Image (cartoon, rainbow, N blue to C red; front, side, top):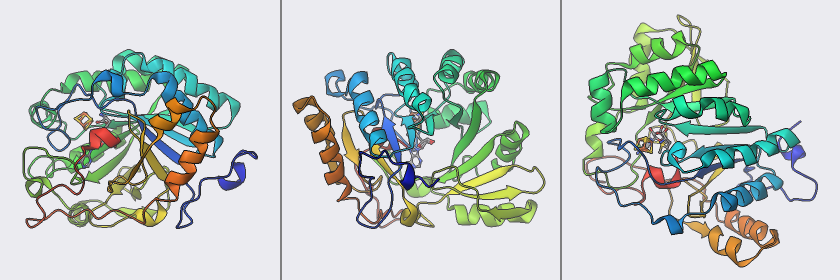
Length: 342
Ligand code: SAM
Ligand code: SF4
């Protein structure tokens, strides 16, 4: 059955002005994090006061409204989603949508630091696949990239996730001078444990106290270099996100490329993003947004909330305008990735 034909009968499906069906919501549950990755945050971040955040009950209400309107996939992200106090309550509550059959997938993107604590609970809530961000296998570089992270802890978290039955996808941001020499090792590492690996181009989001041109590594270059050593075969596989996949003959594993800079993937965009304050961004790379918190708090029934969602979708833009070069030093959007949720 197509996603459209499975939209609940009483709700109009979410179709944007360009005919794209919005079936995927990413939800940032906190802007806080226990790491300070160099491409994501500056070392000294000012975080939102707690009172600005949607409560877990409010997050549940918005997610449920989106699912009523035909969203089939929810990704919980952040900041680091697992640092949000009592976040398992939200996973448990959203898990009921999986049981009802109105949601296909509940998943999360995590830096892995707290997986050793929460892996079993996540599985019990119905989570089956998770994305773990891991840019390097060197403990020293890991410390340099994440500033505050500990590689061994993340490795233990991944092992706990696998023991719990969670399928892992490893995400790595391609960083010039940091992990460009390590991509082969990352492929062997991920594929060796049955995980997909996805490489991501760094995007110009938020001030990071540094020059992004120093970090930016076009994946078109990486792919050409990989093709000299590995047999890459394009495959039509999709995990529901923007990655384009190849299969590597030597490992039998999948390698994804997320290329917002060298190949804009907006034409097939099926998602919108909710921040932890209830702001809905219709595009990761544009500033236009809708304040759902105001509607949520002003009306106790969900009709106004659903109308606000419909109105917001009429403003979903055709695409983003990311550029990284020496002339364009300012970020394309002022907010950090940790605000909108990656
Ligand atoms: N803290 C969790 C994590 O790191 O997986 C979830 C949130 S994080 C913002 C989500 C993803 O966005 C991570 O894979 C991270 O590497 C990526 N990311 C952060 N800033 C980015 C940027 N400027 N360009 C590209 N990817 C970025
Ligand atoms: Fe934290 Fe994830 Fe951003 Fe790293 S990428 S600072 S782990 S939110």
